[in-house]
Length: 247
Image (cartoon, rainbow, N blue to C red; front, side, top):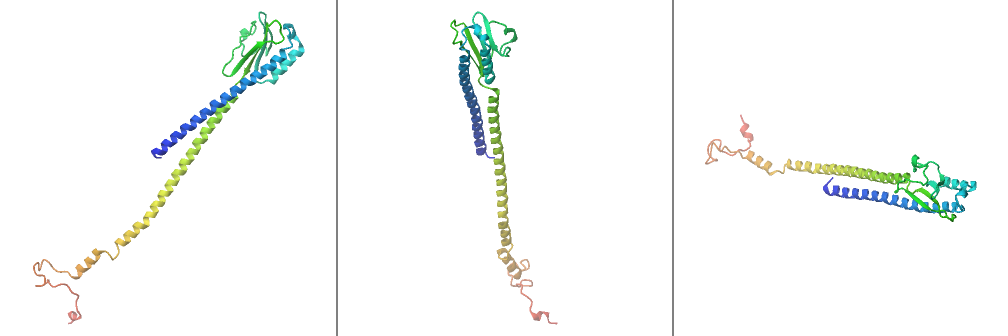
């Protein structure tokens, strides 16, 4: 991997991580906004159910309590619902025990609800039918379930993993293609080398002709350094004639 490819891969990887992070943030924010809107709408329906109560005594009506309990069971995001009277304490609560109300505080006159504000919403308003204004209905809703957050992070992680897998396959394929092209180039250069060697060893070499001419006109330079045409051994070499073999 050259420097340019490495830099490009680093920049692309950074963009993928940023995109995955942004997707998680957007999905979580959108889910929280939708949860708060849904909680507000559900709280309006809950308040409408309690509206017929004109005082604390009306909360003991079996039909009213049955309708409130049915609404609680049909609303998964509703964690706690309480009707209390200022100065007198709790008049109705569902469920009677809640993890959002510590056990030592469950018997206190006024609720002290504790909840994570980033993932839940506490709503309260006076009971519409109470003319004294002392009855208050309070409801706690989950606006951002843990499953939604987990799904957002899971999908982002799977997206990054898929990107890394595709990048690894791309680099592997590029490496194999580069190795194949290099081997082909080496094979293409081999016939040229063989042809050059054959041309070098052919009979057209000037050195070969010079050696042949020198052998056919060999003269002893030591025996006749000044006049090679005189003296024994100074005659140019010539092939033997037939009469040289006569007895």
